[in-house]
Length: 287
Ligand code: C2E
Ligand code: MG
Ligand code: MG
Ligand code: MG
Image (tube, rainbow, N blue to C red; front, top):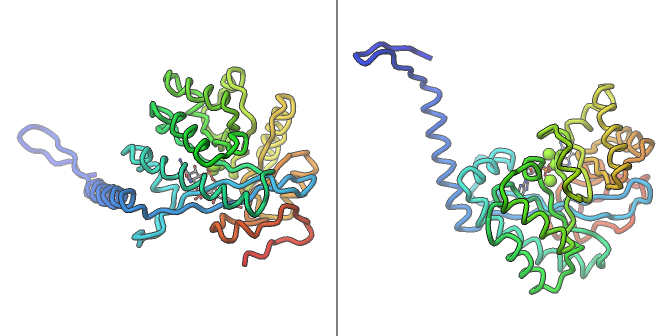
């Protein structure tokens, strides 16, 4: 930072900040256009039960596929979509697209799996959220129990009435609720007293270090214990190695998701995923 003195006193000037602000504005404009022109797609990452190897379901993951020359990842563009509230129109598209794909997945794989959609805290403030979803499920003749929403800890902690109302309505509808990135957000367990969630997803940061860090391993076993006592399912995210899988199996984690089995796949490849996995046949043939 350079501090320059002018008549009105000190004036701070940062060339990096101006540059960053410009880039942000440009990105925001391209995102606006991307939402209008539907330049996005959904990929599906399978989840499998550790004990039985049976398919548990798929998490839908958003990709910006067209006109994204810099190949910007969801970790960068989703926060911006949230800040600009563009996540609301896009979220409606995600619901519609996800549920049409769910119909195709059902034709191939039967109805014994769940589809998980990530729903941002911003979307929970939308008055029409549950109504829209109910309508879509009804139009496509899909049982709400085959749908799961992944919410963040900040959604659960929100003191906004609309958010709280929507969470209860979703549960009443029979939609499953998973807490995403568990352990990385607000470190309060109070919301677990208030809400009947269905599962906890252990953030992949813990999984990545579990074999080298005793602390991460301790945190993971504690989350697994907590889930067991609350009778919740516990899903390990970002499992990349056979060693991690064995550790999780030995510690009675219920479900696994990660590159060890498969990355997020285009629908055509997700349709080919086996309903029953044999661990010694890993990795899956990804086509
Ligand atoms: P998330 O919901 O926690 O999703 C898991 C992320 O971990 C995904 O990143 C997935 O591709 C990645 N992943 C899965 N297995 C592995 C693995 O074995 N190793 C590694 N290194 N990574 C793995 P992705 O797709 O880049 O998404 C990042 C985040 O963006 C998501 O984190 C979620 O918070 C958000 N997101 C993605 N799609 C949507 C969406 O449709 N709506 C909303 N609101 N947010 C979304
Ligand atoms: Mg997620
Ligand atoms: Mg997650
Ligand atoms: Mg995550």
